[in-house]
Length: 302
Image (cartoon, rainbow, N blue to C red; front, side, top):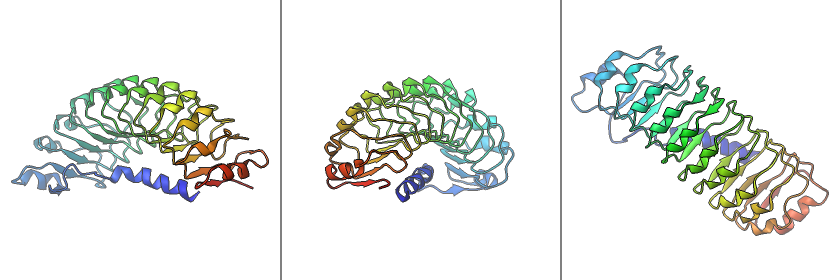
């Protein structure tokens, strides 16, 4: 349990890592002060200022690369945001936004967007216009749809979708060849699509608390995957092909319907931690696994 909690903390703090576009540039926290500045203003942090709308003077800050509007009261996107054509990092965490407008396509330099804790219902096709986007965090919203054109974001490395209402994800995710981290836990996913296994750079995959019944044999193609979290699904077995995932270090399968795992789990030489608590494991299964997983830890009820 401690391992899972630590992982969650790491994933949540990802939104804080590298949050400024340039650590050498001054970060302003008032628009009036920024406008008076003699030097080029690239970073503006307006978090926690009880804003319901933006000061329209922000359009004077044409060189902005970083803008944080975190934890305010914004319900709609101010059109002035879309005039900031050099914007690279946009943080809208903790507002009341209901949509991602089509005008977002104007922000073609964006590399990071954080929309955590809003009320967004879909990721529209226009997201595909953001060719430089590498980080998209849209957890804790009301998402029911991700447009297939998200696959046009070829530079995407991190995609955070947890705690939404997604029943499916597009098979086009498989085209995201640079994606390293995908978190779609706490949704309503029914299927693990074989096409997702084409995400060859994937290192962390979290699909906990969904309704998955099986994993595809194609999962063997995730050769770089180190962390696989499938807690709280409806899995009754694992495919034999999982034994070909040689990079796997952490495998979390708690609270499924597993009775046995593939015979030769010892082939996973890098697997350091296997968590099986909350499964109706056959008698002696834990002992068998511990015997074959030399150097790895196996957790489960005796």
